[in-house]
Image 1 (cartoon, one colour):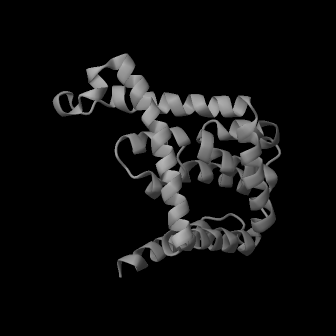
Image 2: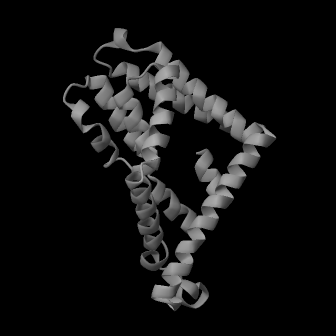
Image 3: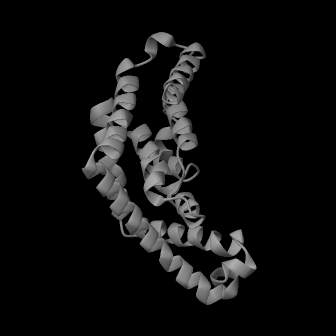
Amino acid sequence: MERLIGLVGIACILGIAVLFSSNRKAISIRVVAWGLGLQMILALFILRTSLGKAVFHKAGELITTLLDFTKVGSGFVFGKLVTDIPSMGFIFAFQVLPTIIFVGSLMGIAYHLGIMQRVVSVIAKVMVKTMGTSGAESLSAVACVFVGQSEAPLMIKPYIAGMTRSELMAIMTGGMATIAGSVMAAYIGMGVPAAHLLAA
């Protein structure tokens, strides 16, 4: 019964979107169907196949290992405020914020070297082909996962003036539905399993 609550939630969200749509005839069933279908396929791959579980478990381990470097660096700078949690307690400013800064710096370097642009464009091209969405809104949706809601629209700044209301809505919804990589790293720093966050 609890699993049905999620399906009812999805149906309610779609129903509200249709209810408040200013042009119901323009709603693309293909985009909605592909969006839900890709999520289901990804969920089944992650939760039901041994390969999917192994891939996301390994990815979670790699991310956790990478973020452990932050603990070493912030421990060197802040000392016992980071390393002595039992007596000092969990201090957000010294144990989570350095992680956000570290991941933000890594993303900045990856963008400077052109690595992230390639990753984002490949994923955006897959979305354009499968879902039939425009290149700009797909690019923004993918970029939200890596850089966050405020920076992603800057990647498509030249196209924003000519976008339709539905494309602008898709960009805003994509931003609200995702968290940036640095925020995900902060959650991992607070003890949330990395594999679970990647799957979500």
